[in-house]
Length: 76
Image (cartoon, rainbow, N blue to C red):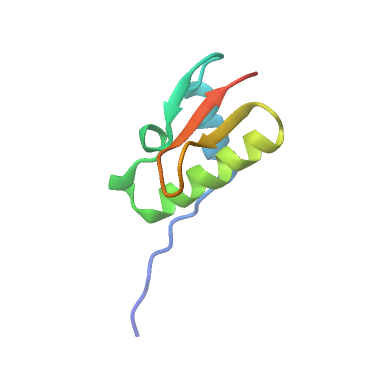
């Protein structure tokens, strides 16, 4: 048997982190917000959190071309 340690990932915690990081009028690339060195889990949680903020109309996400850079614009 092998014991696998599982980290608890929280969208709520990521939303708080993003709120502290982002300011009204900021325009960033997704890569600036997701920390690849923390692993794929952090990238996924960041993306889901950004989608939630976009749904709440706090920010706008857009891409200029297929498979291009994802841009984040803080609108509220």
